[in-house]
Length: 198
Figure 1 (cartoon, rainbow, N blue to C red):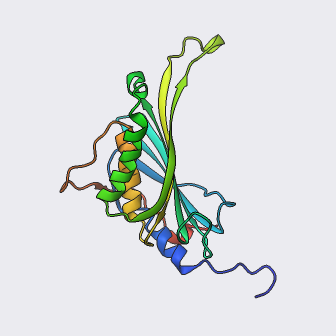
Figure 2 (tube, one colour):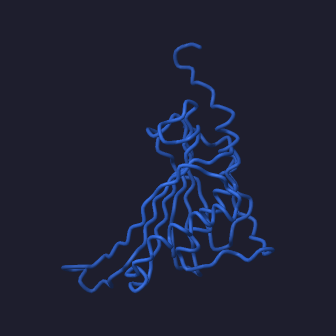
């Protein structure tokens, strides 16, 4: 290898990155490739998503795949997924003391429902209230739920994990998962997996 040559992207990372963009998602969800953080792992890729009802954006999120051939402490493997979901919620819902455990169960139950094997899961659920003051005093008070989580997938095929994350966003937005046997619509755009770079 000469100076200036980049190390080849590991095949395991390429295979996993190719599964980050499913061919079918619910029509309420728009997925897009987004820049991945560069300092958390030697290789990373990320997707962002928004959940819409008509023209109203109900939830947003991002899912980051990290890959370190040597693994990292607490990962239980070479891969780590980091998820973020934010959704507007009614004030009475955010005041419920069971919201945290319920929101966390949305993630774990969605992973289980999609057969997405994982280890070392952890995260936080946050309720946020925004009030306007001064020239924003007339703005309505808004309440939001934020869920941040990470876990280690036990396989390179991440499609079940992506589907679970999409279900989590829909649940946070107040939409139940699709019933069994109901197909999602084909995704309008599909990126070339080779476009994932560190």
